[in-house]
Image (tube, rainbow, N blue to C red; front, side, top):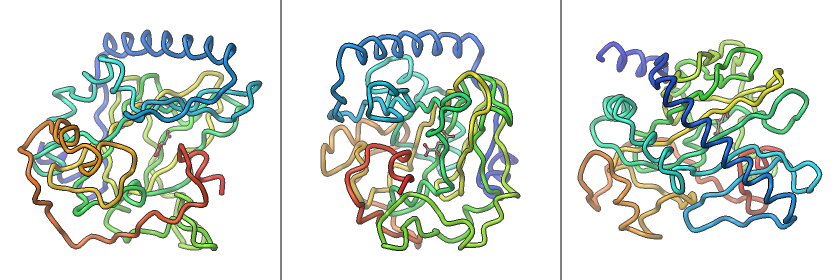
Amino acid sequence: MNSDLNFFKKNGYLIKKNLITQKKINKLNKIINEVLSKENQKKRKNSINGTQSYDNYHFVYNSSTLKNKDILRLNNPQNRHKIFYDLSRDKKIISIVKQLIGGSVRFHLGKLNFKLPNKKKGSEIGWHQDWAFYPHTNDDLVTVGIYLDDCFEKNGPLKIIKSSHKEKLYSHHNNENFFVGKIDTKKNKIGIKNSVSITGTAGTVVFFHCRSIHGSGHNQMNNSRPLILFGYRASDAWPLINDGNPHPEVDLDNYNKNIIIGKNSIKPRLTKVPTIIPLPKKKHYVSIYELQKN
Ligand SMILES: O=C(O)CCC(=O)C(=O)O
């Protein structure tokens, strides 16, 4: 494990092949197909866009027009479906997260990104640091990505720039000073050619630091590329803004219920971390896809 921690500290990510069994992956995919087909049937009958719910469970579409309403993402699936909740608390995942972020673990967020198949543009993700979206009092936060299908170069894998978590926090604001959730890599002379493609068979899990620069391109294949992302934070890393996920000021009990390892305390740990508040936004955005179009 020490070698894993050393690798993570040096590179800002860690890959674990086949961490989740094929049996579990099959069960997850079965439920996802059911959830998607239910949602697709609903969409045909009802043209009204769903609003965000109290637990931030919602679908993200690539367009608001009825004709082209493909689903890009299911936000916070763990809040409504036990199978995702159980996966977010998977012992193998949590024990690695615990080591990487220093001992305590509080669940932060979940999303299931589908990345649409060939020609259906709209699901590419521009280079960004998750930290820019949700600064905390310390940066012991990690994102965990689980591939539900085999993912190779042509599927539009997640790409991470090695060791970028040790660099500064890059501006995610545009020239007009609105938060747009992406980095101008040319302006910042960031060598994206040196990024690592996170590829692997279904069940492969990647852990990456909240300050690692990452993104993903087009999916050239004919099927979508399902990737579950779960966010975890040290239990003494307190959010500086409300990002729509469990937040102490909104519901302290719920915030504390998300502690997986460690004790609740109202004493945040403050470290010297670079922070920029992700405001102002031009309007309220439901997802990174919409936000980055600016
Ligand atoms: O789905 C992907 O390829 C990347 C997702 C991502 O970075 C995000 O949702 O913040």
